[in-house]
Figure 1 (cartoon, rainbow, N blue to C red):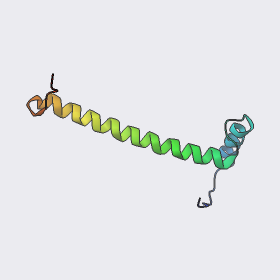
Figure 2 (cartoon, rainbow, N blue to C red; figure 1 turned 120 degrees about the horizontal axis):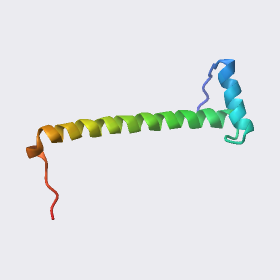
Figure 3 (cartoon, one colour; figure 1 turned 180 degrees about the vertical axis):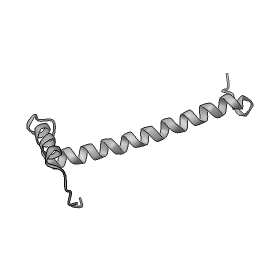
Figure 4 (tube, one colour; figure 1 turned 60 degrees about the horizontal axis):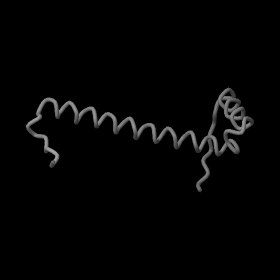
Length: 71
């Protein structure tokens, strides 16, 4: 793994430390790593939803372009 220096406001560090103290994460690094991974997955999901909404709108506007499922 690579090391990255990170500066956070004290209030955010306190929130992370609280989550660690509650046993939700092993340590600060684990908490931050998990939170970043979760955010990346959230962004991917949001992009996928946007694509589905666009395709759905295209299908409504041009149903003749749809490929039917075989029976």
